[in-house]
Length: 228
Image (cartoon, rainbow, N blue to C red; front, side, top):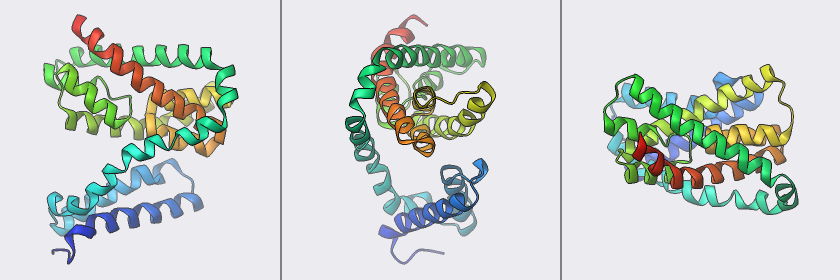
């Protein structure tokens, strides 16, 4: 089976499945039906069962990846709308994100060492908790493989957006600021998407936490990894 228009096939297939999954999630808001989890699983099933190569699929789908940068920049809109709240809680946000970023880097490096991962794979894993474009840059700087890092970033985002709300219920975290910091720092863009489901403020705080975590990781990851 070969698509008639390879240039558009991957794009149409991906967006079609995503919007169908989104409609389903609105009707049945269960975590296992999240579009961010359901869409890649369905795409994998379709490609493997149909015999369509990834290269053919990616001829059109790669345009979606290119939208990641502009989508990240678009988070500036809610930041601007809530600038006064951000100023008021600046100290808490910076301290919390700095702590979370440091823990993410150190614990990931420690886990990689515990599992006896080779140096290249370990360094690819370290920047997994920040948004993909910056994570790939950090990975390249410290000696990892950017494309492997991208896989870890996606996995971290999906798992974080699933586990995050569960932790909030267990720990009785109800504040918009705390929710935003938790999801933005731990699950970057995917977590931010989930944070907006709670409230606009949670999404805004998650946006700035994600951006701040990325910048902090870009600065401190190479320094920390040089000592580990």
